[in-house]
Image (spheres, rainbow, N blue to C red):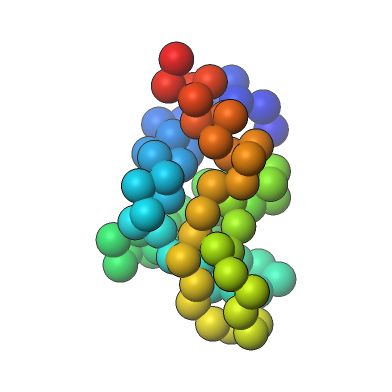
Length: 82
């Protein structure tokens, strides 16, 4: 997936994570929440699978950790913001 395929939902999720409002379930198939609400599963897989989002800390499988942008995620958000 390239950034040209990102929807407004992808951009909003990246902005929320950059603002410190995201949490991720540490698992082989991650789940992401923003402000306590679960995010779109497909968009979550796009962001994590493309290396844009990761847990902020090492945590046991199945646990909840703060979500942060990777360096690639920061660059992608900047490019999408314009």
